[in-house]
Amino acid sequence: MLEIKNLHVDFEGLRGKTEALKNMNLSLNNGEILGIVGESGSGKSITALSILGLLEENAIISKGKIIYNGVNILELSKKDIQALRGKEIGMVFQEPMTALQPTMKIGKQLFNVIKQHRRLSTKETKEAVLHALREVHIDQPELVARKYPFELSGGMRQRIVIALAMAAPPNLLIADEPTTALDVTIQYEIINLIKELNDKRGTSVLLITHDLGVVANVCDRILVMYAGEVVESGSTKQVLNNPIHPYTKSLLAALPDSVEPHQPLQAIEGEPPNLLKRPKGCAFSERCHYVMDICKEEHPELKDGESNHQVSCWLEKVIV
Image (cartoon, rainbow, N blue to C red; front, side, top):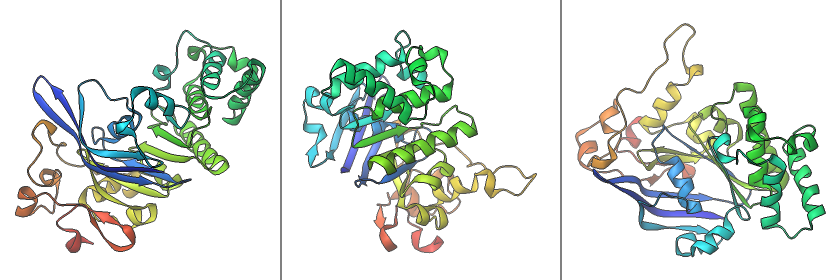
């Protein structure tokens, strides 16, 4: 369904050019849930916004392709890309309060989206609004439809954003940190809701998160990103049970479940590199416990391992 090939995205600024994405590659099959994980600033959201053509004006896509159902999105006109948004590709943004129109009632917002993408009468559209709310497990949909976003809880607002994203309904759902700022119980409900919609409709899902616990529960495959690059990819079982890249290992070691009771959490020492001056070799070399001379001089390519388990590391044969 979706394939990104060798995508490069730069941002022009007063201090120069920032390489936000470098050699970005991914593929997503029909009905599959693909998780993209990594620290803040690793390029996860930039990848999502590139697919939808929502990058800032100072963004430059210097190289690569984004192919959706055989069509290169980067070659489409603004009008054609607009036609894909919502109808073919839906998106759940990080913060529901900024994704919703604060001065418009929930029902009206859903009504406008459904009317835009589906050929329904006014009566049928109103019925579709209530159906969309019920589908995301909102009780009393008639009452909620008459409310403004500020009258709802964070969890309710996130359900509304998912309902908006699925209203067309799209073939692909991009969920960008859909559980951010929600308590653990609500996070669990939102993730289960996305999984349920995937099972029921066969919708493909690109799930962007920094929470490895989330991807472990719902994703078929995982991409691990660092400094705008994919450093490891494979099935969820492969990546979580047999991590190869030192960065992936560090992420897993930092999980609370990985630490003995009453012991401090393990943090990843150092900071991500300044992408205004991308390191010559491996971007993780300054924070890596296994660093060698070659790591600082030559950039490792993403190579295939066993059963499509890919890793970008000079040490992949040594530390497996």
